[in-house]
Amino acid sequence: MNSIPLTPALASHLAAAPLDHVTREYPNKLDHVMGGPGDVRSPKDLHPIFYGSFDWHSCVHGWWTLMTLYRLFPTLPEAPAIHGLADRMLTPAAVAGEVAYLNRPESAGFERPYGWGWLLMLAAELHRHQSVEGRRWAATLQPLADAFAARFKRFLPKSPYPVRVGTHMNTAFALRFAIEYADLAGDTDLAVLCREKALSWHGQDKAAQVWEPSQDEFLSPALQVAELMRRALPPAEFARWFDAYLPGGLPPVLLAPPLVTDRTDGKIAHLDGLSLARAWCLNGLATSLAENDPRRAVALAAAERHVAAALPHIAEDYMGQHWLASFVLLAVASDREDRS
Image (cartoon, rainbow, N blue to C red; front, side, top):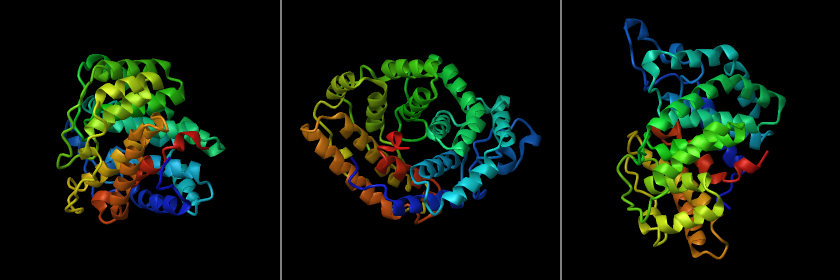
């Protein structure tokens, strides 16, 4: 489906960044509510596994990138380094430390919802692994996945409204990942709850107004809802929903990559992520459209333009390097769920 393929050379390029940064403790931007002077601690002391990559959620999806590439390309030159790092870091004691951080009263809202979704996405990826070590890593991480699944189960019933912004608070993005995890892990309660919430939040969305990009978005508010509903609904129901959601087809504002003026500015660098997140959603949308649907070719061409605009810049500065490889992988590996 993708016109920019995930080749072994690109896989090596994408692996290099998280191998460098998932254990790089500083600079670091903590999401940390302190309950007293004893909570003034270093990132590594707070988070035994996910202390690198500038922030907790970027470290989590850096690990998702490594684990996905390790499964898809087991002979990659970087595979031994990934294996060794996972064996060293993904231990029961370290996972227990991450769970203990969540159990602090001050951590109730920690990383909601973006980090929640990414942790479940990492767990989903490990469930796909058929190797002995992959199954071991999946079992080791499971208590942390269970903790975040439980948080979704508590949060969603009391959340009547979605959050539609193009940044970390976007609920469609997190729910999309939670559904992938729930389907793969066999968590029927979570799967049903997520699909019910997707319908409650977005089932009646029609003639969407597309006001993007905003200056520091890295998600497309419009396309992210479509990607959630593509995963939440059966194909025929999604087709009807999408025809009503964007009745005039894909608007031009979604087809042109955003302008990125300063990649050393962490917020402006988000716009490279927007290009890649749009490409992921557009490629997914194309898979749901008939071969002769003119929107299919439009979506695929736009996805290619967006990847081409961002890919050369993902390692230019640490403000992008610490997270963009994950979004490239989403954008160019639309078949990753079917490959083993």
